[in-house]
Structures are given as C-alpha cells and as structure tokens.
Amino acid sequence: MTETLLINFLFLLFPVLMYVIFFENRVNRHNYKTLLFIFAAISMVLSMSFPIRLELGFIYDLRYIPFLLGSLFGGYAIAFPLYVILNLYRFIVGGDGIFLSLLFSTIVFIVVPLYSRRFLELEPVKRIQAAVVIAMTTTAFYLSTLALFYESLNREFWLSTAHLLTIYFLGTAIIMVIIEKIFSNIKVRERMMESERLNVISELSASISHEIRNPLTVTSGFLQLLTRSDSLGKNDRRYVDLSMQEVKRAETIVTDFLSLAKPQAENMVTSDLKAEADYVNNIMIPYAKMHRVDVNFSFSNTLETTFDRNQLKQTLINLYKNGVEAVEEGSRGKLDVSISSRDQKIVIRIEDNGRGMSREEIARIGKPYYSTKKEGTGLGMLMVFSTINKLGGRIKVDSEKGKGTVFTITIPVRKNPAEAGTKPS
Image (cartoon, rainbow, N blue to C red):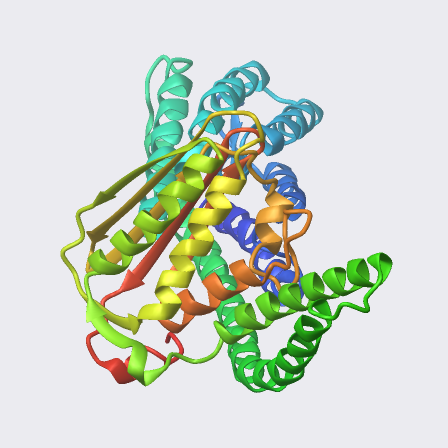
C-alpha cells in the first residue's frame, strides 16, 4: 500500500521535473495553462492506473492532487477538461466507487475553481498553505464519505486513511514548493533581463540624445529664420511650418531619451515624495479637467527614500497623462492617485476608469516604441519602468478592457544616495 502511494507521488513529480528540464526557459509564466492542463492530466491518468484497492472493492489514489492544483491555478478553463478526463478514465478503470468518485469530483469541480482568482493573488507562502489546507480538507471529506459504506471501520481502513492523509499533505506541500520555486526563478530571470535591457538603454540614451540635439537645434534655428523671410511663398511657408512641427516632435523624443539617463547627483534628494507628488498633482489637474477627468489625490506616506527628483516627477507626470488619456473621448473620467507606505516600502497607486488593456498589451507595456496610443512613442512608459528599476522598485499592472487600469508601484526605502542608481539585487 505504501509502495503504491509512493509510486503515485512519483507520478506527480514526473511532469514537474519534465517542465523544469525542458520547458522552464521557454514558457512565459503568464501563458502556462496549456502545459498545466497536459501535465495535470498525465499525472491523473498515471495515478489512476496504479490505485490502491480496498477489500470493500473501492479504489483510491492521488489523482485529486493534480486535479485540485490544476483547478486552483487554471480556474474553470483547466478544471473542466480535467474533470471530464478524470471521470472518463475512472469509468474505464471500473470497480466499485465510480458513482462516489463522480459525485466527489463534481463537488470539487464546482467549488474549488471559485477560489482560483483569490488563490493566485496570495503571496507564495500563503498559496502553499492554502493548497495544503484545501487538499487535506477535500481528502478528509472524501474519506468520511467513503467510511459510510463500511459497516465497521477495520484496521485496513484506518491504516489506509493515515497513509493517504500523510501522502496528500506531503505531496501537495512538496509539489507546491517546487511550483512556487519555478515561478520565482522565472520572475528573477525576467527581472534580470529587464534590468539589463534598461541599463543598456540608459547608457546609450544620454550620449545619443546629446549628439542628436545639436543638429536639431541648428535646424530649428534656420527654420525660424526662414519663417521671417518675406520671399517665402504660401506653399513654401506651409512646408517650413510642417518641418518646424517635426523638429519639435523630434526634440520631444530626444527629451524622453534624456530622461532615461542615470540619476544626476545634483538632482538627488531624500524625501517622502510629498513635495514632488503635490507639484505633479497641481500641474496635472488642469490637464485632467481639459479631458473631463476628476483627480482624487491622497497622501499618507511616512517613509523617505533617495531618488532623482526630476526623474521621479517625470515618472508621475507620465502615469498621470496615461491615466487621463486612457479615458474614452466624450465620457466622464476618474483618476485616483494615492501614495502610502507598507512593509518598509512606499506604495504609489494610480487607478483610472479608462479603456483598459488586454493581457497581451500589459505584457508589452514598457517596451521601446510600444504604445497603446496612436501617436505615442512608448518612451514615456519606458522611462517609468527605467526610473522605478533604478530605485529597486516594482511595477504591477492590473487592467481589464473597458474597466480601467491600476498601476501599483512599490519602492523600497533607501537612504544612501549611492544606492539609488544601483541595480536591484
């Protein structure tokens, strides 16, 4: 009996190990549901192929661990096909207890995926604890139901119960620890790649921008002289005006690039962000009113950190502008901005009720030259990500089409000016 349970446990480990060996570097953590379904289905089928058979005629195994984890991580989209496979294969295996298995799996299918969204929002340690509690609860419920079919509970039943509960506890805990470690590794790798990319852009932006700005200044000066000439015809003057507009647009792009440069020593301050936030809020309220957007601002932060004042102001301005411009034209908008502190971190939260973004758009935000706006260059959000990265902070984006977007920025407290420009560990 114990040997069979341990074999079942190996069936649970096998897909996880296959993922680590062959797929961890290829699959995005936001797009893992196909593999989740395949691996969970394989584990279920293998576990059901080598069950423990009781004298009463009932059989049981560890099939509910992949079924539960698939339902928690994938919701109903994964739970439904797993539910179908579980019951079809259980019918093929045969034996007593088919109806009990169908009834129990139906209850799990209906109840557990309801918790999926909340489960995914938990911290890793709490996710592990929640998964273990759910697995133990469902197993205890299943065994209690199974006990009703016994006239008397013999030694075999209690021994099987003890073994099953122990394996379910350890199996769920170990599998969850491995899954969370996989997610952690993927996050670390993404952060390292993002940090390296932003640092390369930062190094190049200052030198290239200064070189480009010089010829742009000269060109702009000569174009301004041309506009004062009386010999220009109507069409020529129109061409000069268009050229002036394009030069100004080019200068705007260069300015955005300059904001990606490393923090400047003369702009470094240690502050609770109150002065910077008030400044940005005051200058952005008129812009928001022009777009019929109401701004609600609150400040309750008590922590201080070191940062480049100009870069942080520009970061807040870019986020304000994006929130305001996300509101559909002609509709009444709302922008909620709050700055608070939590767990020795400064938390900036900016929420709008605009058009929202799809999951694909969220994944691409902050990439060079990607923008959801028709005339956007994407450099504004690139600058936001670059600045927060220099501060060792994190940006979380939650959005839904037609319902708005929430940017949550967490910045760790740093008092040493020399640390502000270093890469996060």
